[in-house]
Amino acid sequence: MDRAYKIIKQLPTPGTIGIGVLSVDRGGTALAIAGDGDGEILARLDRVKMDWVAKNGIMLSGMEPDGCGVHGALKYKYQQWWLVYTSQQQSHE
Image 1 (cartoon, rainbow, N blue to C red):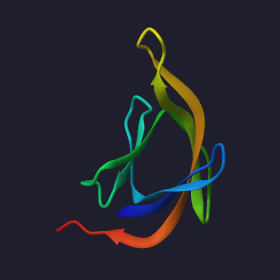
Image 2: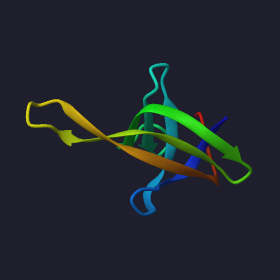
Image 3: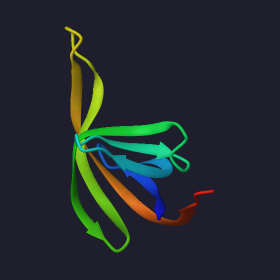
Image 4: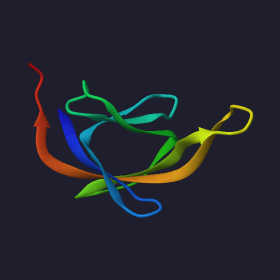
């Protein structure tokens, strides 16, 4: 079963990223993907961890890409996502 989430970025102030699915790989990278996983990538977190799970959603935290430094190295900032369960179920046709 796939589940769609309303994805809300928490820092510096809460704001909705969109509605989509979550993909987390073994390397610890989480992607919020629009639609049923075949849409655009809405947001990305590296070194992600699941902080807690509640009956109404999931809280993730990790490092969000935040541009490049003067020498071209990728910069990061701490971020949290609140994933609110939706009633949308994704179908496999």
